Length: 415
Image (cartoon, rainbow, N blue to C red):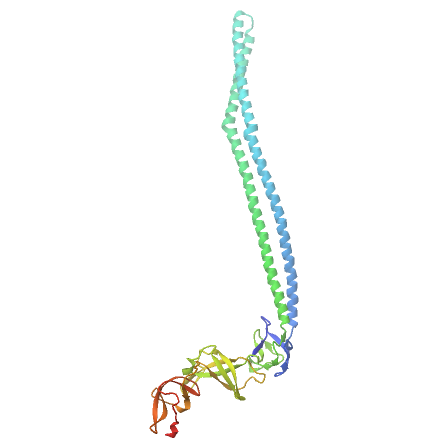
């Protein structure tokens, strides 16, 4: 049997057409149809969502391009700011401040030289005053100039000392802070740019995932719509299946809601017919998969057909009179055209093949106390004779030992 199932996923759909039960159909013909209305609405909604996700994905990609450009620009500006800060620091440490300290040193030396000259002039005025060549007022004026230059020298020396003790360390620290701040701004700009770029890439990943998810919805909706028409996979007669409902089991009919994967009808595959039979517990241990078999149908009792064992049930099917039986399936090698599904028959399974061996008809044997016997004539008298048996079927039993060839075997009823 080839099952005909609904392949419309994740939904219950209503049948709107069924080919009549038992009808013969050609392979590829439509045998059932489902209502497409809800599925067409689902496809329309999915296609609209797909358009939205495509726009979102394109926007996310453009945003990443803009973000990369902005990040490059920000990083370039921050790098230039760092370079300017380093140049300014170098200028302060090696240029302006060094020149200022050198200038203060020169001013101290200049004041010292002017003070020495003023002292020499004062000494000259003292000599000239003793000789009467200058007045006391001129001598005191020279002394005032010396004092003025002493104070000026002391002031210049103090300025140089303050510069070396306070201004120079302060300037060095300010330069370090300027460089550190610019370097920190540069690193922070790079980190922020990296985070923003990663966020933009994450947005693309999310938009891509959303797009793929909605694309899957569209493809699923299209497949569901295509699955609304059930096509005959092979030629044959359609057989309705029973479906379970709250009110009981009934054959499928127009208007039924069918679950995905639920079988609603079948078409027998006459190219692969199977005989289902039962084997006794004692015999099932002797058979295995792929053993050859001969099949005899009641309708064609004079003919036999080749097959092989394709399935042996592991669970007991039933037991009668204390004998357990197991279901066994035998697949017919080539099914004749005159076979019909449901025919009865039997099968012989070949568990072992024996060629050119002595055998006796099984109906002429007797089995007692675990031994096989036949009736033969000994000096004209029928006697029960024991022999060692080998394999057997429903007609013959192999003789291993105990009976010679050309021995006449008699029926027990002739005794």
